[in-house]
Amino acid sequence: QTDSDVNLLLGGVLQALSGRKLDSVPAAWESQLTNWLARPDASPRMIELALRTNYAGAAELALRLVNNPMASVEVRVALIKTLGETHCLSAVDGLLTLVGSMESDPIVTAAIAALGYFNEDRIADVLLGTYPKLTAGSRARAVELLCSRRTWALKLIESVDAAVVKPEAISHDQVRLLRELNDERLTKLIAKH
Image (cartoon, rainbow, N blue to C red; front, side):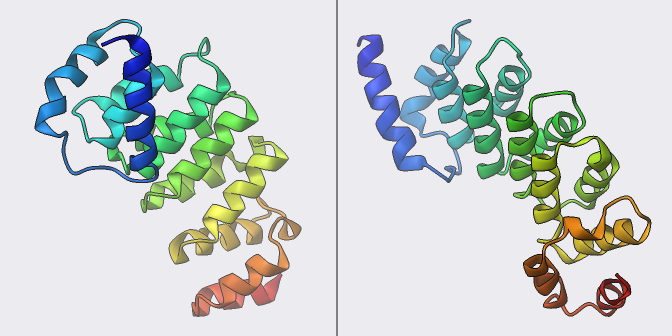
C-alpha cells in the first residue's frame, strides 16, 4: 500500500466519521493504527482518525500537535474541533490552557468552541477569568458559549453585574435566550441591566 492509497482510504473514513466517534477502535484497524501513530511523522489526519475511533492516547497526541507552534493554524484548529466533537474529557485542561494563552485568535476561538461539548462548571470560570484578555472575536464566542448553559449563564450575568463583562457584549437575541432559561436569579440580574 502506498501513502496515496492510505490517504485516499483515510479521507473516506474521516468523511464517514465526521462529527462523531466510534465506541472503540475496530479490531482489524488497531495494529495498523498503532504502527501509523508510532511514526514520528504521523499525520494530523491519522491523529484525527485515532480520536474518532477512541484510540487510547489519541487526545495526548492531538494536544501535542495542537500545542506545536510549528504546525499550521488550519491543522491545529481542525484537531481542536475534533477534540470537542469526540468529547475527549482528557483534553479539557489543554483546551482551557489554550483559552488563557497568547495563541492566535483562530486557535483560542476554536478552543472556546470545542469546550462547548463539555459540561463542567470550571469552563465558565476560566472563560470569565480570561475574558478581559480575549480579542473581540473570542469574547463574542465566549459569551455565546456562556449563554448555552443555565449555570454558565448565571455566572455570565453575575460578571456583567461585577463589571467584568459589559452589558452590550450580550446581544438582544442572547438576552431573550437567557430569559427563556426561566431562572429567577438570572431574570432578576438581567432586569437590573
